[in-house]
Length: 243
Ligand SMILES: [Fe+2]
Ligand SMILES: [Fe+2]
Image (cartoon, rainbow, N blue to C red; front, top):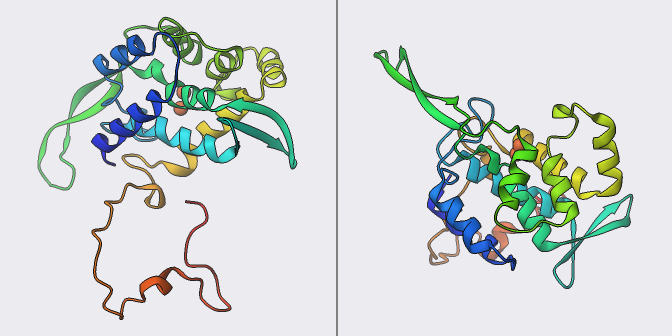
């Protein structure tokens, strides 16, 4: 994980959204612990910068669930047919901000335990919840965002219900929201993909980890050159389509 890189990408993605109040929203985000908070106390990305990494993971997952069309629009296809059209700024806002409720939410406590990787005992830090604004989860995210920028109805519903049936007291209302605005289900799916398939406890899973860009080298003719990435004849492709 590269937090500085993630901050730069997050800011660049947010800068593509043209909406009144974006400057105030970014001010809130930069002053808060959004860039340093974990994504959870112990389940996924329980580490500094985890919330930011998770938000970017959800964006990557959501963009890949959808099919990009021209004019900053995505199609949400179902069984090979376009079910609805989703503007790209809705994709960016819902993915990157769905968990903004986790700002001012975690704190670091200490417990007496063996220090990781040693036999030494001492005060070991761990994340715990200290919710400074106890207003729930999805609805709280929607409320925080709406204090700064307007949200379209699909965006509002998607962020509100992004936990899906895992956190829904009123399943009938959630079911109605999914029918009304399919982005609700797309965002929930992307959130599940990120937390279950892309993320480990303290970093992304290996295939989704940040890698330093390689310095351009000289082709010595022995490393395979341009043929290194070619599929083996009669075998499987060497590159992973999931990336
Ligand atoms: Fe969430
Ligand atoms: Fe999430």
